[in-house]
Image 1 (cartoon, rainbow, N blue to C red):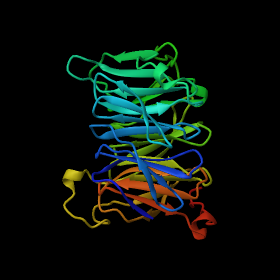
Image 2: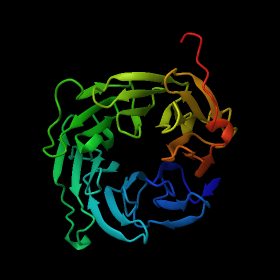
Image 3: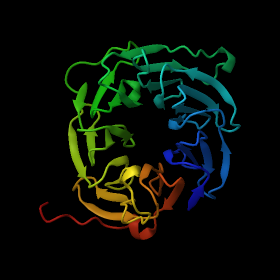
Image 4: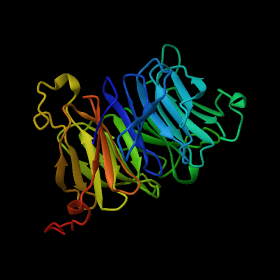
Length: 334
């Protein structure tokens, strides 16, 4: 199923918890929500003046937060598209994520002019009057080292930590209540040699998978930050997800846009790639896009996946029975 509703490259695709809604964002400033059964565009969220870099939907699909290069995060009512509040930041915002329970969300923004990069936590309970919500962060963490630029922020299991990814390939944990950087084993790790573009959790938040410009994705233990498996490709990886029902991971990426000299999908290496999560072997690819894949997600029931691309299209794929009932072959070395 092909969904065309954006004029520029896709930056984020996201299923809600029930899998009946699909959210997409792009450099065209307008987040969009779709019906996953029909492919119908249900609505848009209008108000940003810059590229959308990240978004997160609350556990009950009632509220959406969007991050943008316009130095703003916006809080929306999903069903009506009503903008509830704008949170102004000191630099372009790279990431925004709801905590479990939907009372708080965290953001990361770039350094800008004299301002340092920042990690912030905002308190926004759903039962509060929107007019009573404060645009002032509950927790603010300044990243004083200008060599370290945060790319995305996530909440670990039970909201125990903030997990922040960086352009230099590091991940670091922070206390979401005090803002203190965690110390000791399992508090930080250099997982990649280049920028970490995205992190996605498994269903229980025991492990996560990374996507990086160094042509690799890593399956990582969330508690210890030890790398469990590595999936090697021949191109930058922009998105990666873990199947909730099979021992598979899906990777999306491709050449940088400025280096693409052909519109042929295979020549440009614009496929979603399937790897066995334990054996680390690639076993399949899905084509369709005419530009680098910039974002991927998998439905909560594991029966569908979505990809977004530099070509501006969102493609929703439903797995057939051949895939769902396929038995994985065990490599000879195992």
